[in-house]
Each structure stands twice: as C-alpha cells, then as structure tokens.
Amino acid sequence: MRGIRIGSAFGIPIKLDLTFLLVLPLFAWLIGTDIAQLVGVINNLFGSVIEQGPLTAGSMQWILGAAAAIGLFVCVLFHEFGHSLVAMHYGYEIDSITLWLFGGVASFAEMPEDWRQEFTIAVAGPIVSVGLGVASYLAFLVLPTALDPVKFVVGYLALTNIVLAVFNMLPGFPMDGGRVLRALLARNRPHAQATQIAAEVGKVFAFLLGLFGLFANLFLVALAFFIYIGASSEAQQSVMKAAFQDVTVRDVMTPADDLDVVTAGESVADLLERMFTERHTGYPVLRNGRLAGMVTLDDARSVKEVERDAYRVEDVMSDDLTTIGPEADAMTALQEMQQNGVGRLPVVDDHGDLVGLISRTDLVTAFNIIQSRGTLSLTNRERSSLPDPR
Image (tube, rainbow, N blue to C red):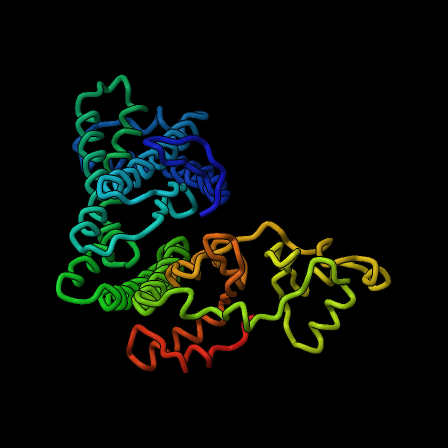
C-alpha cells in the first residue's frame, strides 16, 4: 500500500494512508459521543465505579475520544509489528507497515509458504493484542479514581485489544484467522489448494459479515467487501504462482529474432505508420544496436500531428526502463509489471543486450495453457502459439 512515511522502527518503514487521516477523527468523534455508554460497559465488565459526569463535561469527552482513538491505532501498529518481527525472524523482508481505513497492514515482500512459519506469523499479531489488553487491564486496576479520565482510556484499550484479537482470529481470509486456517490446511495439501479453500471460507465469512453489517454498522459492510476482494486476489495470485513454479521468462518471451523494433532516429510519423500497418502499440527502441528505450502509441500521440515529421522516436520514448533477465521466474515478471504499471518488459542478458520481450498477454496465455494441460511446463509448440506481445 502507498502512504505517507512518518518514520521507521526495526528497519520497517511506517506509513499513513490518506484514509487513515479521515478515519482517525471519525473514530475520535464516535468514541467521544459514546463516552457515557462506554463508561457503563467498562464499569460492568471490570467492576469499577468511574463517574460519567466529569468525563462528558465540556471538551473532556472530545479529548478522551481523541486519546482513545490514537491509543487504539498505536495498538494496531504494535499488532502489525507482532507479525512483522516474527516474519523477519524467519528471514522475510517487510516492505512497510501502513495504517489505513481498516486498521493496519504489514506488506510482505514475499509471503511464507511453510505452514509452520505462516501459522506462527499469523498468530503473533493477536498474541500481541492480547498482551496489550492484559497490560492495559493491569494498569486499569492500579490507577486511582483521581485519574478517572486516564483510567477510562486504559480500560477502553484493554477491552478493544481483546476484541481486536478475537475478531482477527475469525476465519475471514486474508485476516489472521484465515491465514491460520490456510496454514493448518497446508499441513497435508499443496499451498495453492489450501489457499483456495481458505479463500472460499473467507468469502462466505465476508458475505455473512456484510449481511450483519447491513443491520448493525455500514462500516462492517465495507470491511466485508475488502475481505472478499482480498481473498479472491490472494487466491488468484497463489494459483498463478503454483502454475508458474517451473516456468522462466525465456519459456514465455518472444525472442529478439522475432521482434519488430524501431530505431531512435525514426520519425514519430513513420512510427505511427508502422503501428497502423503492423498493428503493434509498443516497440523496443534501439540505438546503435543496443536497447535505448520503449515507445508506445500513447508516447507517439503526445506529439501534435503537424510536428510528427520533425520529432524523433528518441524524443518521446521512455528510457527509464524496467527490464528482466531471461532466467527469472515468469511470476517475477508478472509482479514487476504490476508494481511498475506496465504491460510488457524488455528481456536483457547479463551484458545488457536485448534478447526478447515478455508481455502480460504472454503470461495470461501461458497460464491458461498450463492450467488446461495440468503441467508446469510449456512445449516448444505451445510457446510458438503465444500471441505477439507488441
């Protein structure tokens, strides 16, 4: 997830998504307007005698609402650090932790496929939340009645941390409970199959949560939607990763000998004419026989029609290239395309020479062939059947 970086801890960048800046004051307002009822809940659960009057007088309720909301998101941050630090112990890289609309998310560079590691990583967050809840409850017990405002905030955090831990352990993949379920399923099943089962359970959970939210809280409906989308997306990624396990970029790419290329000195007018006759929307650009950039139809269109004879391809091409090696995994190529928002990647060897081109269409076609054949390799005939990526 993208966000505003506000710092780092343990080498992990901490970010705030723009939705967090909206939801934090909303939470503060909701808590502030509900102080009286929350005090009643805390008194009933913990056997305390916090007075409601002083906490709702003047601006105190809004101060307490803000303090409780900030404290809640700090606890969510610790929850995500629970996941992240255990993952780092196993050698996984954490790209960032981001606070957003629905709490927090730790972005892993690579998700674990060992079920024991995934189980341990998944339960680490709820364990941290339970620990924070217990610590807050102990602090609540020792605080004097003279500090009722502080006692209320601590009591609120004790309650919400336990609720957070329990809710996260529900089997709503890709929530923590869903990941625990996948880990347990993966003990005696392939990881992709375990993911599909956990994702289906997660979708059912999301549907039920959405129905409940219609009668209780529309926030739960939105949460259910994102759980459903997350389950579907991760299941698809897992299946594709399994399918491309033994497939390299070389297996899928269009070799350099079969590529149509343009030179940096060609005019934009000639480029558009070639695009029309050859029905390609993108070309590798060569300068003195070496890869110099990529040019697309959108690049060519950026030049006014009357100026296209004067402009050269090198004037409009993109020379900030994301490339990939021929021996890289096909799944890595797909991830690079997704991260960089491109539909094709030049394939270069160790010397920087262009040896081919791989496109998103190539990968989708290869995936469909692999799925239909039930094997993780492509024959030469099947490779030749892949569509021209340009």
